[in-house]
Every structure is written in C-alpha cells, then in structure tokens.
Amino acid sequence: MFLGANSAFASEPGKGTNVLTGESNLTIAQIARAYKAKGIGSIVVGDENYGEGSSREHAAMSPRFLNVRVVITKSFARIHETNLKKQGILALTFAEPKDYEKIEQQDRISVTGLGSLAPGKSVQVIIHKADGQALTIQANHSMTEQQIAWFKAGSALNALN
Image 1: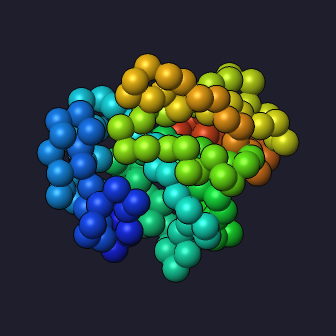
Image 2: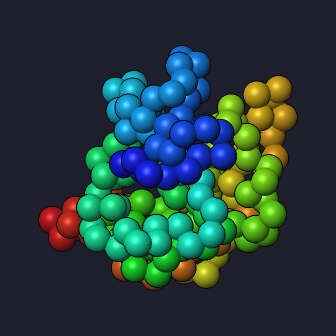
C-alpha cells in the first residue's frame, strides 16, 4: 500500500512515521498494520487526483484491509473514488481545497455526523492539533443512498449479506 506514494512528511516515497511510537522511515503499510493491530482506524489525506493510475480494485482493497476508514483529498481519480466506495471507505473532498494545508503530521482527525450521512450533505472534519487546538473544516462526498449503505455495511459485498 502506497509503496511509491510521496508523503509531505517523508523524504522517501512510500515511507512515513508511526505517530504513536515516533518510529520513522517505515513503509506506510507497516504503519497501517501497527495501527490496525491496536484497533485504530486511519485516515489518508491526499492531494489532487488521488488514485490516479490505480483504478484496479486492489488499490482500494489494501487500504480497507489495513483499516483505513476515510480518504480525504482535494480531488479523486474517478474510478478509484468509486472503488473506495465499494470497499466501504468514506471518500471525501475538502470543501475548501486550501484546508489541505492545515493538516500536519502529528494531527489526529475525526469525521463527525456520520449517523446522518446523506447524499449531498457535507460532513464535519475536526483536525485535533498536538497542542490541544481543534480546527473544524467541511468535507464533501458524492455518495448515493446505495453507496452510503455500502459504507455503513463496511463494503458493497457486506451489504449483499
């Protein structure tokens, strides 16, 4: 997962820091596995055209397997966004693309109001800063009622059962 991805917080593609332990230069998959082992879901923050060149279902299956719950970006590659939705991952875009710049490596992110998730209705994203501050921003989604049911079930396949 993300082997060739460039991180704003790492000097080497596909690498990052486990913010729980401070250990750096780990692969993103190693970090995600460590979070999953502790029962912690994760959120991926991306820039423009997230998922470009990765329209295969596996590009969305790996994050789901590693407990990614949300991907929030400036924009998505169309097919990849749909594949994320099929995997039960909440695909969000920043209502204000400049809000992307507000996120720092040590931040924790919460998405609120998911109980009332509905087509065309934005969601609140709270960025919890290391110093205790909290910033609230808005994010949009393009999910239909059926895709929301997939999200609530954990994937399109789960919704069939």
